[in-house]
Image (cartoon, rainbow, N blue to C red; front, side, top):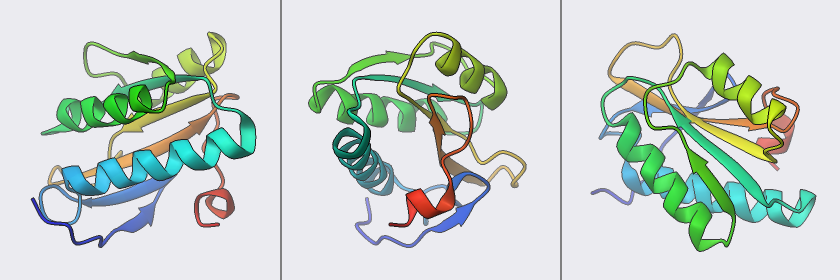
Length: 131
């Protein structure tokens, strides 16, 4: 596992080539950073973790869920690949403070990503993600 942090912001989050730029280490750092920031800024309590059908998406989602648990957050993780709009709707509808979706959306299959979805079901604005 590499500890090199090279990543790019894409649609609603971070994207990278699986096992090159998008690694377990990067996912753990993104989750840790996201949960620290949102906890301090918004009082984070309840998190939904979701993933798509891409290679290693479930593994990356487990990392996110583990980091959330280590922060003392209430965590629900989907048990099968779930489309981003479904995860966003569910998170908003059922009172989750934040939804993390592991997906690279429309990017080629060798990519994966980390999307931050607000309690309103909308993407976190890039300005929030880069502060």
